[in-house]
Image (cartoon, rainbow, N blue to C red):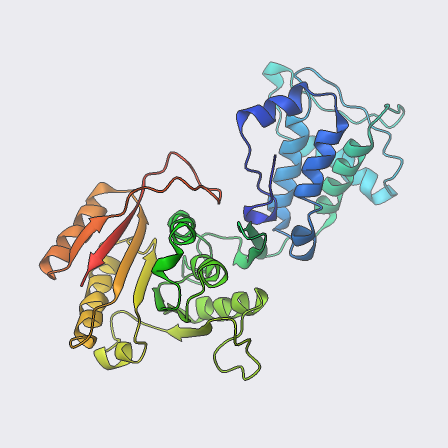
Length: 358
């Protein structure tokens, strides 16, 4: 069955679902998808970006009918503006004319049993009339039945940083954490380069850490992080009304190039994590420098456990990371690939988590 996931709308679809959409005459399947995506309570409360919703609904319409089908709907439930938008949406739908995959709206006809289709066109019409925003929400369902919702930038690079969106390795690390909660339960966790906050929020909700420190260096990222912490019902440490059953949560500014051993010592982390931070040689050198200082600040105590997750986009970059770790005297081993896929990311991507010994 389809489930709500990233962007508030993403389906965990398989080819079988697409086949059912094409071959089934059961309107309940389409209604079920709408209820679990566009009309899901989380999505209604925290809507995704207008652009994403528009693309999703357009694609859903396209995949709902077999090739060569001409779709006819009454549009009786639509207002004048929505009817105009529906007419416009047929021009925006992805269509391969060479294969005769055509969708049309015919106001002079009325089809039988088209209520879910009318709902679908109405939802699409609303997105066509809505103003686009530079921000949208992404919601991820958790195994507990809860969810993590993030306010994110709709642009990959915004305000001079890539930290305002969620990257694949953050999803992968969150899955691993949920599968291995003992690594975080009743412990203080420091996350380096938290970005939008997905991994940390999932750990706070699923793994019961004693304290969690989100960190980043960019002021706009930190502002968004604080907002996402509050959006998910957690309190920042300075809040005297904080829920005592929740972890102590801190959002800290941490510049890897200038932070000192003394500053790192104040965090006293038991576990350090990072995801998708190996994006350039300079970042790798800075990260290894922070790890060396973390080892130094726990000289007479057990060093923190460290887990770094990354997507293998460039083998040379990964090789540079392991080389720099060796130069710093930091041993590493790869964690076994986990089987639990909870969140949507490209399955063909090669991702890894390294367990570092400081």
